[in-house]
Image 1: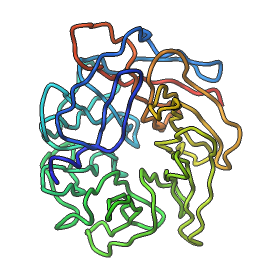
Image 2: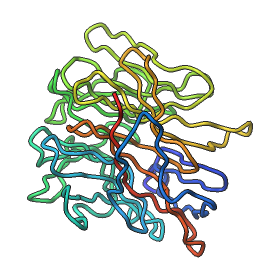
Image 3: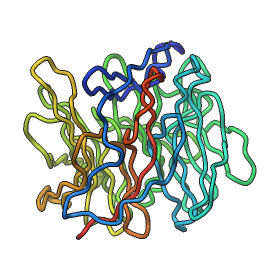
Image 4: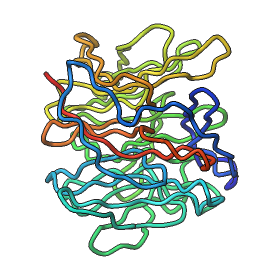
Length: 322
């Protein structure tokens, strides 16, 4: 299992194919004619590159105090669990600091801006773990995995629970557990949950027919409300700090089912006032809000090295015009 459940989220554009939850060695094919920078629409401004290396940087999350950025880095030149690690960047400074190596991915901050949760995929089944930027080390939240692929953990303040997804049988399920790792609870099918900043609810994605759609789950009523529809994949939803807006990726597929584009969008919590933020010939994904209202995301912009056998992805930032 360790060699096949590493990455789950597929990025494919033209001849490029990346599967984030699969730790088997995948040969990356470079994208040609990629723009040097993501293009932004009139609904966005102040586009800024945050990282610039020859690796693949995904899932950026800004600390609650706005001073530090965690993100998941993949090195396609490596194999197995050595491909994935978590990096730290202090905002306004040069360079990055590798925090946790080999099999560490999908970080999310604790409220104190020092601790964070993440997935640790070195065990035979990935588990939810935690660490601190000033101490390091890997500590399991629960003694063992709760399913076949525990991932996407974050703290749900309104219920004092850890919210995450795991694979049970053939499907991914939404789950909670206590910070101690006890009281594991299944909530239903879905993945990539993101907690509301204050309310007892969270966002998640779930397949409806052939496409992933975004939902809100109300923990007080158990009601699930679908926010998106149509023949696109809507993935990676994240709340704004005030809980009034949702940022997400929208992916288009061709007739063969291959994903051919991915861009960053916004909508309000009712699924209305949809705004496209990025455009052009780049693949933009895994967005999240910062406490200052900016949006951090991953982009393959600037891939000009024809000798490299994969596309690098860097972290970028923009400010939406709300």
